[in-house]
Length: 229
Image (cartoon, rainbow, N blue to C red):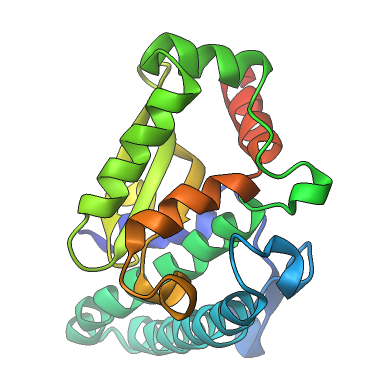
């Protein structure tokens, strides 16, 4: 993948916390969660949320910033080999930051409306493209359970076709790697670190229960904004 495409990771339309490092280099920081670590229980344990956020996401942020700093140095020196070598680290760690920043917003405590089905334009689109919300959930669960190794399962808006679709990405590849026309509405992390402490190796049980705390209001807002643009 060309470097230009990889740097699209920094331009996702999701809310990411930014700052300015030395030499004016743009850096990234760990976003705060909009709820307490234990607020998603019993669907997702507080221990998982704390480790997932503080350890895993923080590691992606730290490594992404380090890779960007090295990239800045390499480009300043005109070191083409180093620029090419850094692309995989930027894709993996930048994707990890982008994906998790979306994931936290895709979740919401039941007491605050988590799990409530979508209405309005997104609800209509789901019925039109998948027949029902139940069919869509079954499709995403099947795709997520079948994904070999680690990765993500996504509900996306195809801006060109004006349709929603289910996609999967491997490892920490962000959805943009499947096409710049795809907008992430909902992403579910199926890396073992997202569920293993609670669900062991039974990924389907995790996928079944995660829907109880899905923030459909957020997905609906993203969808509405994109189709109105």
